[in-house]
Image (tube, rainbow, N blue to C red; front, side, top):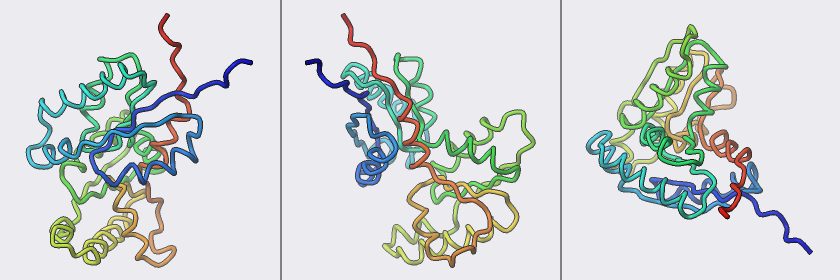
Length: 226
């Protein structure tokens, strides 16, 4: 009796230790055939926040990608928008897809409206996400407004989660008033919007985990080397 087909193996690369628990249920729901394994390196994000995009950070990400291919992965999903540009740089180095979690979100934003607002709490995430939206909108009449939510990072650093969330909700309301779609550069911000009454935000609000994970449903298993 022949063995049952084995689904593609996927490396899911994170820069926040809590994210495997966030993505596991999404993987089961949206890409049930894949065999994921998680890699977490929080220093990639820490270095990017502290120093901006560094060549050594891009080189380390590229090493993770090439090691994933060597380990038999059929694709790599990079779940951190701050290092998304480094993920793109790594693509020519391997023969497997290297996916940015935020690319489908950017495409949906461009399809949804002409006036796009991108909200973040970190400069390191805001720049790469806004740049991605602009590139995906090439040739279209689209405007992109960016905001680093004032005071939110300091509130989180002080352990004041309630104020952090309230500031995000307040800034989201401000941006939604004169834009067609709101993009959350950090998926962790979505929970803050639960503070708002239903219907308070009259525009679509996009975040990356669901659509980014759904990309993996189209990944195909590589044929084993002879």
